[in-house]
Length: 385
Image 1 (cartoon, rainbow, N blue to C red):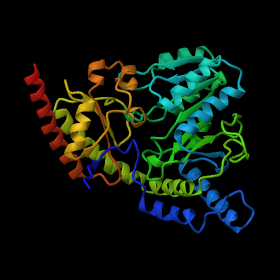
Image 2 (cartoon, rainbow, N blue to C red):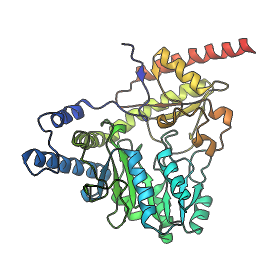
Image 3 (cartoon, one colour):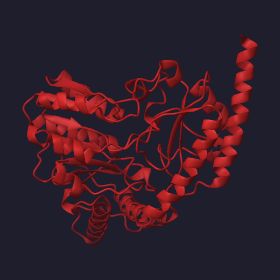
Image 4 (cartoon, rainbow, N blue to C red):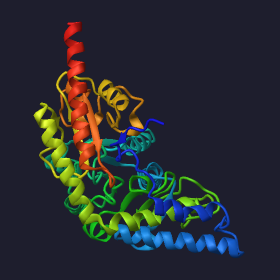
């Protein structure tokens, strides 16, 4: 079967072989329900407890702060909707570059009587300090600013933003789905600066799809989205997905164990990739900001991003034209538009996100293929005109 070189790790990552191996027994001989009182159930509960400790350690949190969910989208919804349900309706403010699973629940609570305010970003995808201060002056009840953007890879100074917001009494949340396993992450430190909640996801760091977590300060009350048996401190009812949770825990341990060396290696590949892209005349989005070491978001002049992604896929390279969860939407990226990027240039955007297995050969092969593909598309455009 034809398998393109995979360069879309921000969308999802392959499951680490050791993670798969650790999960397999919980699909078969260790199939117990963690709420059952017999040995099968107790074994499942022990596995969940161990995974909770691993996730907490990787995120710099306490195990009692880890609320397992079905993924990052559910965790973000749990905080936005769950916090809005227990606080007096007021302003919910989110950055203009948030993932749809933050933006959409914020819109939902706005339709239920809250006021929604988007926080502006600059041309390098960083929160504009003056606009953030203006938001704080309006005394928001809830704030959400993602730690690392899934499209540009730009990293926000969430600690400084949360510190500034402390005097408002707002509850501050950060979506750290793209950060865990790529850059150092410590909830205890962020919590000390005023961050109350943080979202994680397993499948972005070598774990399985279907597992995520909301790291939640125990002093913060949220209302459950799913009621029932009172699982996860009563905040997320439903029989636990034991295999996925086990995989999540081990994936966290593996991804953070060699983080520094891995980030340096992947960062060097990204730099080589960007040098080649600049030689083609590409615009690199967010190039002036601190970014994840694995992410490059670029646009070539007068070339449509969706068309280019399709051509590259057929030529043997799997990349993305934006956020995977929004790929059905042909409109220009809301992230790039919020950055003030011209709509025509934004529609040409392509994201390359490297992973642990990415190599120099992958990068050089991609650049060669991209160059030839771009030349073909430019020739076709010239013939049409």
